[in-house]
Length: 168
Image (cartoon, rainbow, N blue to C red; front, side, top):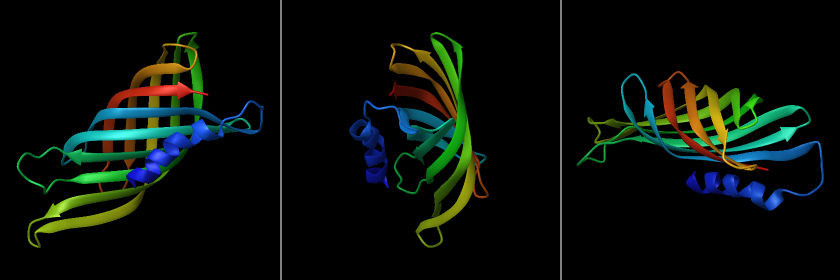
């Protein structure tokens, strides 16, 4: 799973070209450290996004992995999610932009089970909602807060962190 996310994050760097086409990469974003909260647990999250355009539509392929912070135990809750979303980008000022995406995701949640001394593993389909406020540091680089909401039948999770984005 982690190898797939790294490959998806590096792929646009290898595939971007000089020609204008109907399909093209829009940006790549990394959120190296976020915090998440659900009804029962909380912890740290790392996430990455690849955005591409097809005609007038903007799509976001994203992945995230989160884990509860537990000291002196390996029995902690963790989750991973891979999603494909559709969204829009808005320019608020020359130096400030925002975007919002909604889509479908595959959500996997692992929680400790003390009766079998192991973990229960569950997976479901979810609805991810992602929004970002971006301050343009240069023509191709921006930084800003990113909020993600993953609505699903197992654990609805909200995460907040600082995203670093490289535009193409």
